[in-house]
Image (cartoon, rainbow, N blue to C red; front, side, top):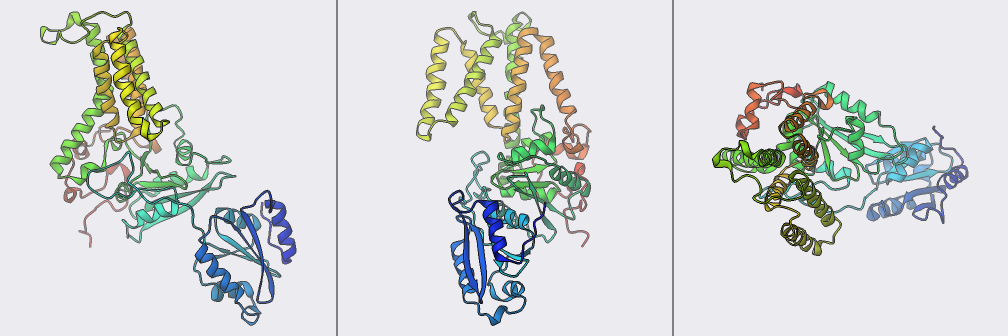
Length: 488
């Protein structure tokens, strides 16, 4: 609902007072009265969201303005001649103006004028770009996204100087009015994918987005009960830029240091920037080790549990598998308890002050684990394989994928423990079916494995040298598919 700005300044002040409860109830929203060239005016802004130096410069220019300078068309002349600042816009609707003011810009209203000026002098509190904790690398850039959207876009533009790079601004949340930026390279991104993502963002209907990008993800994927992630998160600008060049779309939500990459496949979640900071052979080795760790974190325990429960079928060379002493607690329950304990230690370390976090990990891993073995609650093999699985979990580049694997791992352990071989087969069938029927934004989740793509399948196994990456991924159906300069 729009509310036009009135000619009488007193009417405008009365509306602002009523709408914002200026004074004791909103001490940080300031309405400053002044005289500009013999004309009464007010300046509305939020204390703490403005650059003080720019604000002082703007105020000085306004107060030094003479009557002759703005005798005719004062708003236009202030905008084009007087105020020494580039980011100024006209506004004639109060609701639009208030949304902008609460986001940071200042609003200037002049007596006798039905238009105001929005002066964007905002400066949000922000931390310096730092290397993300989850996506650390041994060599490469150390900057990471922060909680301010404008800074995050700037970090990407620093790496992409293509005039075709587009940054659309959207808003969601009727009360929070959260900023959402949609980044893509116009002549590369598939227009159908872009319109699909854009329409899903526009359909977000809720009062606020307090959890930022995670709330947006749940609205645009609409897959609440599927633990497998359908977007890829990254806090690294170089990773975001790389995916833009491939034809993906980046979604940035203000107040979050993580950005979303869409659309993706299951195998995008195995990639890490470390692979591309080394020689292709070394990068391939790193990829194999990381993939093996992720697969072992999912497959090792169910297969060991089945073999330990079916020792009569083991050949002589594998008789060492399984506990040497019988315990009163079934093996599969020991694994479930061990995983619950591991997750409990992890959660406790998150909420523990940093100086004590290391000590907490040692207590959980050594003291509690050792005593549990000595009293017979766990067999030693349980802690060994649980520890190996933990290494695989933390080697996963995608934290969301590692959590999904843990959920399905517990399901496999339970089914294998109760039904043995049929339970293991049933569990794997459920996982495979879940993967097959997952189609983020309408694309096959297991591409290029299903549907099979002979040319692209090799990318799963080795890190191809950059000069050999001549084409963008087929499944994105990009506009400019060739990455070389042959056309020119």
